[in-house]
Image 1 (cartoon, one colour):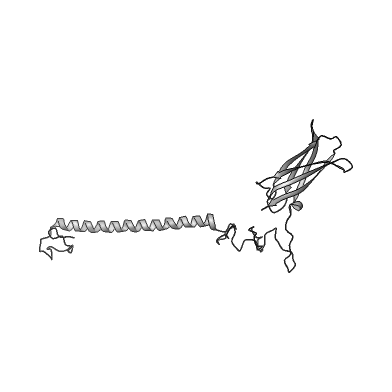
Image 2 (cartoon, helix red, strand yellow; image 1 turned 45 degrees about the vertical axis):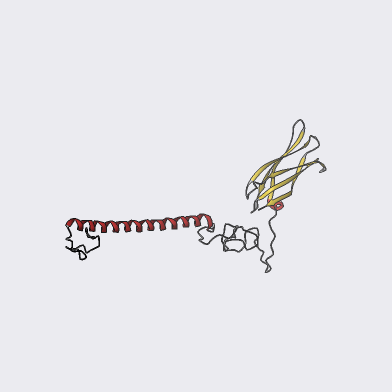
Amino acid sequence: MYCSKCGKQVSDEATYCQYCGNRLSEENKGIGSHSKVMKQSQKSEISRYIKYSVIGIVIVLLVTYIFGFRCKAGFCLLPSTFRGEYCIVHTCGIQGCYNKAVKEKTFCYTHMPSASTDYNYTPEKAEDVIDFSDINISSNSSYTICTATVTNNGMRTYMFVEVKGKFKDSSGTVIDTDWTYAVGSEGLAPNESVSIRLSVKKDFNISTCDLEIIDYDRK
């Protein structure tokens, strides 16, 4: 507590001030004890604030890491590589490829090496994995129309896929051609399908339409 006359701090048990001899009343003692309790309470509040602040910062950093920087391969806790979603353990070993590696392998499905020791491989091509089905020829008053379904059976996404149609007669002679984009920048992901439509000037001699891919981009 503090002396009410000289203002110096003295023992809470003292009856007289050791500095000026002033008799310490019970009121002085109460004020001193209350001041001490208040200081202890303030220290406790500050400690509690610091503790919860640290816990909050740790939680924010942990959530940010898990959803922003952690490898997306299952329960892997390693950080993802630059420009990719997977860590170095789960990313394809081919330079410039950021696909997920096959389980317990070093490469993705596209770059899976052969059994040869020099690791030769054949990259996936749209011409080999994109199929045409439900091809149908019809006509209206002005045009002969070919419709079909385009399906990606591969492991990669293909964009800006250009499809050419060769309209033929019964003997296989090409009478006319047309082309269209099957997909644009949205891409055709694995196992996805889209419908296409090509048309040429109406000709009753047209009986079939052969479709082929003439250009594309891939991820």
